[in-house]
Amino acid sequence: MTKEINGYVSDLPLGCITETDIYTDKGALLCQKMTIIDESMMEKFSNYHGKIHATISYIPDEPYFKIKPDPDYSITFDDDFKKHAEETLKSIYKNVDDVKSLTQGAREIGEQVYAIIENSDELIVNLSKLKISDEYTYKHSIDVGTMAAVLAKYMGETDKFVHDIAIAGLLHDIGKEKIPPEIIRKPSKLTPEEYEIVKKHPLYAYHLLMDSKDLSENMLLGILNHHENIDGTGYPRGLRDKQIGKMAQVLTIVDVYDALVTKRSYKEAKTPSQAIEIMFTMSNKFNLSYFKSFLDVIITYPNGSNVVLSSGEIATVIKQNKSYPLRPVIQVKGSDHAIDLANDANYLSTVIMNFASA
Ligand SMILES: [Fe+2]
Image 1 (spheres, rainbow, N blue to C red):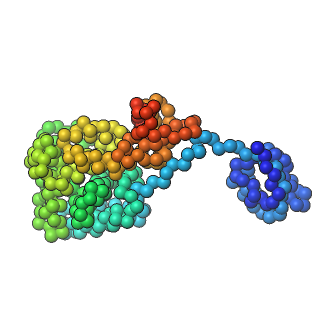
Image 2: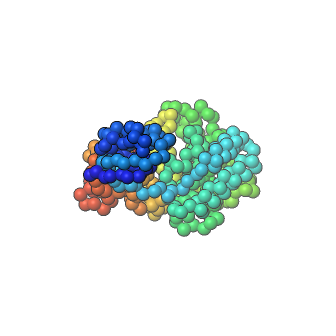
Image 3: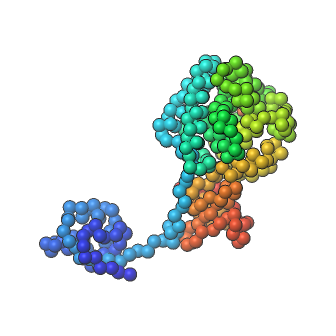
């Protein structure tokens, strides 16, 4: 398909091919025929403001690029907040015995997280947009505080509960600072004796914070009980079901997910699919209804990300399916149509294996 242009250089569409030589109005050759007009060519023409006459043709868009992924409306932290949150958490975790500064710092960051969630268009989390630091402790604290607050708000909890769980999430692992670093940062598997010491971290946190005027009893219990399981297999007390308060039950779910998908010196990160599959096998340990709500608020494969399918094909994620974070709408590379992995009967056995490497 060709088109005549009688106008100015700016009328040449990017990506077109010139079918004829193009001359300036003084007769000088501006551009030879069979040239692709890209941004660098436009730059060369930028000093010429006269008229042109040209015949051009178009290269059609490749089908793969035809479907535009939906925008990502998930919770977003700007760079200033990320920097401030990392610095504040760093000072909190370096001086855990200064309990007043610690709790006030956590309150300040927790309140900002709460305000960001209150002002967000959607209650949905894409972990890659929350990352404030390469340091696991700070990243994990903010991930847990934010995901817990989003989940609590989605579940319809009170503003106070949402506010408090954001702060409790930031502090849930503060007790690990009381455990010898050679154990907590050991790059290999812990011995049973070392693991028993690590299991004391919720109790250490409770003791550290129990007299603080800045934290409610509910927050303290949330922190103390964040490793309790509803089947009684958790620690430090082996509580069951309703003996474990709602705040701890919510924190447990987001804590386990974040730990699974994060790389550590002693283990590779699980893919989002693997993490959720593992959590389904552990579902007797969690409050199942909270876990199902969690699947409504988590984005595992963000819009626009490239993924590998079980068929070996590469696809781009186009749109999320609420409640089915592992089965979004995708477009397979080279095809010209979208596939809804949650609802297309022909693709129910196709699963996303992982992100495609760039
Ligand atoms: Fe913990």
